[in-house]
Amino acid sequence: MATPRRVRVDAPTERRNPATEHLDTLDTLGVLGLINAADAAVPAAVAGALPEIARAVDLAVASLRAGGRVHYFGAGSSGRYAMLDAAEIPPTYGYPADRIVAHLAGGLQALVRAVEDVEDDESAGRRDAAAVEPADVAIGITASGRTPYVAAALGEARARGAATVLISSNPAAPIAAAAEVHIMVDTGPEVVTGSTRMKAGTAQKMVLHSFSTAVMVRLGRTYSNLMVDLAPNNGKLRARQVAMLRMATGADEQTCGQSLDDSGGDLRVALVSLLATVEAEVARARLAAAGGDVRAALGQTPRGSRLTAAAGDVRAAAGETRADPDE
Image (cartoon, rainbow, N blue to C red; front, side):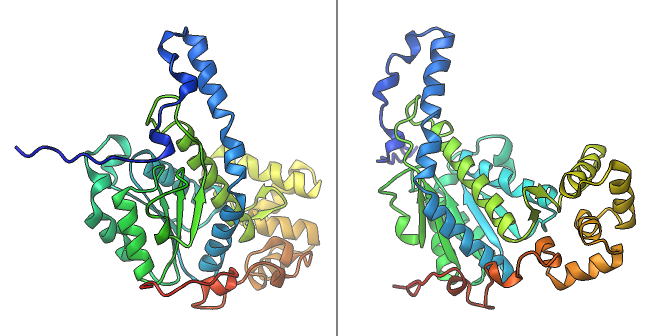
């Protein structure tokens, strides 16, 4: 039997943390205190990457407005965080599920249990990226910045002309050259050496949540800080629609409920109807003319002030330039 291949990973997340070398000598509260102290450093590390996150958001908004898609690629915990983020966009913002999609090394079975060696499968990365088109954005998530599955996926996406983004916790990520934007969150050594589901994983979740939320806000899927496109799939969410309509308009519960009924349960239509004092069908027409943007439908913000994309030119719309994929 062949000896399994060993791969040395040189990344901050693989180094030993001197602050936690005595971890196994502590009582329960002491262990939790060390973990909590380490976690407290993550938000500041994410804050340092905000300019790169903003670049990725602008690329994604331009892509989605031009009819493209956003693809996440990851293995293990990184891929699971990506799948969770993508899964929560449709019910939260009423956004089509096929526009922000996640690809997990090993497929759906790897979502609930570890599948050995799939993160090293470069052919799977290329195969999963075969669906990427030139107008799309491909985002690779890997704490070490070297995962072969992610590297192959980003390389294939770049070869197909798509914009590429890497999220890592390694300043010297080996595959950073395959990405136009490197969102690097240096979370340092983990509390338990190499356990990247800890600080690095927390950073990935923060980056993904910030990224996708900002994308939805820029696409006009909110009004103020209200989720005006949430899918009212249960009683709690239908009540939330009424509550948000009351917060936005100041109208009483009965009026808001009636407006929602008149609007066929469409919160955006009810919102424009109440704020502009027009019938539901007029509100619906205004929203259609404004591309679904509530503020634009109300005449509060010129739609042109938001980021727009020229067809087939995602990077120009985001203020980005890039070299030829083969360079």
